[in-house]
Every structure is written in C-alpha cells, then in structure tokens.
Image (cartoon, rainbow, N blue to C red):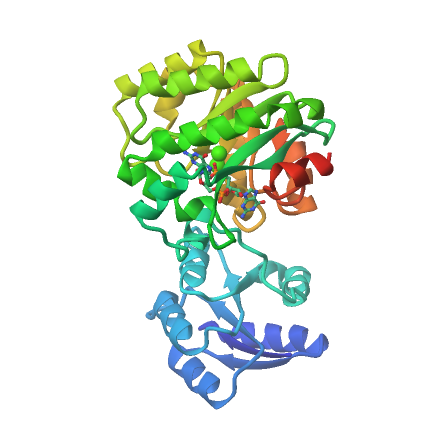
Length: 383
Ligand code: C2E
Ligand code: CA
Ligand code: CA
C-alpha cells in the first residue's frame, strides 16, 4: 500500500519508513500540510496518516481540505501525548464524510499500525433512524389519511436477556404502509406526527392494532412488550387511557412497558410527573428511552418513576472507537443500577459489542445482531 504521511516531527519519518517498509508499504512523508496537498495532487495514496498536532498549522484545516478534495482516501491518526482532542478530530473527519480507520499511538507504532492498516472497510456506523429515512417525506394530509385508513402497522424487534441470550420481550415500532405498496420507517412520519399534533391519534391506532394481535403474541410467552410514547403533544389523561386498555388487553400475556422519549417540545416537569404517574397507575412499567442524548436527563431519573433505562445506540456504536463512550456506558450502568433500574443496550450490531456489554453488566440487549424489526408473521415464525 502507499501511505502518505503528514507529521511535522521529522524523526517520525525514519520510524515509519523502517517499520511500514518492513511490512511492504511505501511511505511518502511530508512535514507541512502544503507538501501533503501537493503530494496528494500528484498521486492519490491508499491511506493518509495524519498527525494533528502540527506546530503552527492546525490539522483541522487539513481535514476540511481533505473532505473537499480526497474524501475517499481513508485516514489514520497519529497520536502523541495528551490527545484529548483526537476523539473530536475523528468526529470532525467523519462528520465531513471522511473515513477514519483508527488512531495509532506513536509510542506503540509497532503494535498498533499493522492492525489499523489491515482494516479493509471502515466500521459500520449506525445512523439514528430518523436521519436515515428523512427523504421519504410525507405530508400531514397523507399521514391523516393513513391514520384514517388504519395503515399504521406495528413491527416487532426482539429484546434479549443478557444472561440467557433468549428473547424476553419485544419493542413495538410503528410503520406506515403506503397504498401503492411499500412501507415507511418511523423516521418518515413520527416527527411529523409529533409536530402536527397527530401523535396521540397515531398512538391510539397503533395500540388498537396491537390489541388485535394479542392472540398471535400470547403464545410467544414474552415477559413484556415495549411501546413508544413521545412526550411531545401528549396529554397525560388521554395517554393513560390508551395504556390502560393495552395493559388490560395483555393481562396474563405480557407486561406493557412504555418507552418515553422526551423531546424538544417537552412539557414541563410538572406535566412529566403527571404523565409518568398516570402511566404507572395504569399498570405499565416505564423506560427512559435514548438515554444520554438530547433531552432525556439525569434530572428526570431523580424525579420520575422509571423502571428501566435504554442507553442510546450512539454510545454502543462508538464503544470501541471512543474510550469516552465506553466509559460513559459504564457510568450509566453504575448510575442506573444504583437507582434499581434495568438497563437495556440498543443498537447491538456485532458480537464484540454484545460480549463487552454483557461483561459490563447490561441487563438486556437489542439490535440487528439479534433481529431487525419485522411484521408479526415473521416475528412469530422466528420464535
Ligand atoms: P427508538 O425508540 O430509539 O427505536 C430504536 C430504533 O433503532 C428503531 O428505529 C430500530 O429499528 C432501530 N434499531 C434497532 N436495532 C438497531 C441496530 O442494531 N442498529 C441501528 N442502527 N438501528 C437499530 P425505527 O423503527 O426507525 O424508529 C425510529 C424512532 O421512531 C424510534 O427510536 C422512536 O423514537 C420512534 N418511534 C417508532 N415507533 C414509534 C411509535 O409507535 N410511537 C412513537 N412516539 N415513536 C415511535
Ligand atoms: Ca424506543
Ligand atoms: Ca432508543
């Protein structure tokens, strides 16, 4: 492979040449970003190795330029001492559409470089489903029509016990069937439903569909079914009535767990107290969803009667790339367990993530590794 390297410390040139050379790689070494640009314009390398601590220049400017001119060439960052900013730099690079294979500590070059260079493809980064599906846009009229025609369908994704690795529950995720065929993901209509005040209608329609499916769900013997409720535009009494119906319909079959997502259009804490208390009184358990991002706050844990906490999938996605994310998962676990909350990790896509999360003490696991959200027929068939 051809490695184009930028480091303002000329001593690195010898080390890199010797070591990368012994692995059969060609090293082109530059000490200024100007030289790197010229080198890349002459011939595109296979990998760019970048030291961000560049004396007078800032490596961040180089990232901007690379994103504009050589987006497809993967990067490896070199780290020296005290690299608190490396993680942020990696985010800037990835935010600009660049691929980062990893970080190599200069002191551990011999051990770390071969490993990073052997990465064929970048680690897959799960996107928040909202963003991924934003292009499938829908009008308020279209949504209203779908609600009227009952074209909101529950999909089911298994949630496993971390101890037995057997499914103990499922999350119910809304989908919208289009009249011309095809199915829209939640990201294409849930935000619209929240903004337009249709979210209560949607929750009602979805719950009714779910109740119709009870006879098919019962034989699966799931301990619980998780249903999402956005705190946006939700009125406590109405929501509690829906939840009571669900709890009643699934009595003797599965417990109903309500996953609450707080949003920017958050009711004040007084309203949240009313909502959560009503839901608990209605017989449901409560989970705080997407914990660690946005508006799901530690304050809410102190004040509201939650039973479970769902660690946002962005932490799981990054647990091997960002030490901070891994440490935050450990801290969230510690905090949640000290408050007697069950902890669910979402977005588990790899066996390595699964194993590490189990080792860290997570109670439940959910993610594509175990099953994607699917319609009831497929869900029941896979049990
Ligand atoms: P959420 O509650 O955080 O649900 C988890 C989302 O992550 C789901 O996206 C699920 O398909 C996705 N997911 C599950 N495992 C993985 C994985 O391993 N990797 C990745 N990358 N993603 C995974 P979905 O179904 O598109 O839903 C998006 C969001 O829409 C949900 O996020 C939830 O906030 C909202 N939503 C879905 N259904 C409803 C509903 O009935 N009511 C309300 N209020 N919101 C809903
Ligand atoms: Ca959820
Ligand atoms: Ca979530």
